[in-house]
Length: 333
Image (cartoon, rainbow, N blue to C red):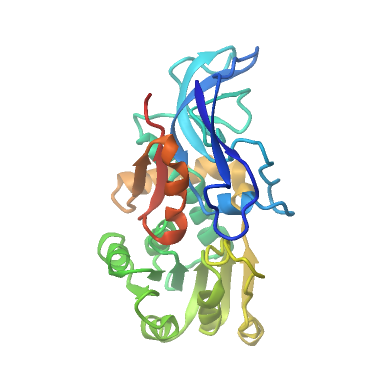
């Protein structure tokens, strides 16, 4: 049987026990041209919150009654597809369930001998691709830039900061709590850290970036985005990747008040969606894989076990109780 988390209703504010329901259904039978995947790991990402909203976005919303959308990695256990054999490992969009059948669209093979499977939905998956193209292509970083990244201890932010360091930038991360701030500076090599839970972020930016910011990579939105805008340098670039502080709002999203700083400093603010760079994923993964092998980049996956624990684990995205990439391991029955 196949355990599946189904979207039961559209949440208002923070998702709760009524948002999803756990169903147990027969394992799907494959048709010609399809293969069956036993899923090992499920990626939990802040973007999933937006996919539950019935509104225009870069990707259609999850419909009521559908399996909750999520990135996954697993093993082919049955096949009627010429391109995939039993024992192949693949990553794609399998959703929050134990098994999925697919014709292979938007799936590709991965090698567990080269990297651990969870890394293919983390640093070598969508979060890593987001960081790579967001900071290099959209942020247009160059050696000597001062880079500020919010959510600096998270799946995307931790990779953004490390790439910026590799490219010769000064990097300052914003995160919540002493443990995460030490992780950024002592393990990831950031030049400075700002603890938004225990200090004034505006003053922290002034302390760590006294001459201003060349690139701000934003994962959180809200007041922190405003503080960064107030400290931009001439021709600065602001990359809008996410706004996790706003995703569970019951009222209107809080927008930037200091946007005139873009005018004064002739700066730019650009939104980015990683899907725009899909054709170049392999190139980025190869380069980041090389950095990991050389010891220039660290990858951290925070793994929790049991598909029954999906809602509880999902909430770790928003309550701060995780470090690095949040992953759900699909426990064996």
